[in-house]
Figure 1 (cartoon, each protein chain N blue to C red):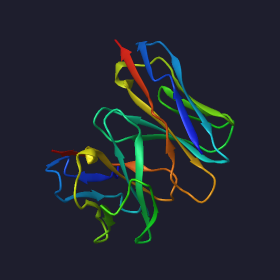
Figure 2 (figure 1 turned 30 degrees about the horizontal axis):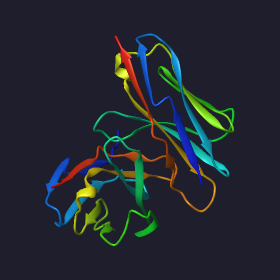
Figure 3 (figure 1 turned 45 degrees about the horizontal axis):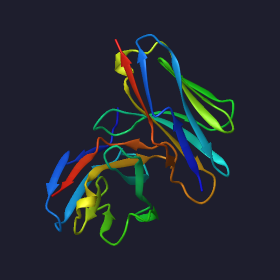
Figure 4 (figure 1 turned 180 degrees about the horizontal axis):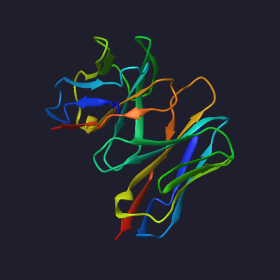
Length: 112
Length: 111
């Protein structure tokens, strides 16, 4: 069964460093998303991507964040200068039609 | 503002003890309501989509139902492996295609 994959599973970085989180969505899906979940809290939407451009973004997704689809399979989230409060689980999701979303296993980001 | 409230926050059941989880929502119009299962440290796993009041979906010991104001996830004769957090997400009508997630119900099933 096709699934969304994410790498790395755990990333530890120092405050102020740049990180890139990688995702491979399900191959025939057209809509891509990044979410984050701080421990014990709700799943929070960051950004959605369709037709090679950002379609929606939340207030969390400020200038420190960017997304790219560098090739036909990968979808990346870059955080330019990490802060302590960026520590969270980051989930990539994809959807064939913008309705049902299928999530990856997540990347645990720890900023020290 | 769209709101999604799940109750209870936590639920402990004995194996075989059936129960229901609730997701109440306030939206201007409903495109779809989604149920997910999330295990600790893992991503949400898609379970069901419901589109209109009266609709029901089933999978193994789980059955999801939908009214105009709420959805229920019924768990029949649960097993310890059903222990997880169950998330509800609502996609409202309008320009946005981003669902609003509830905080989830943490279910523990004791053997």
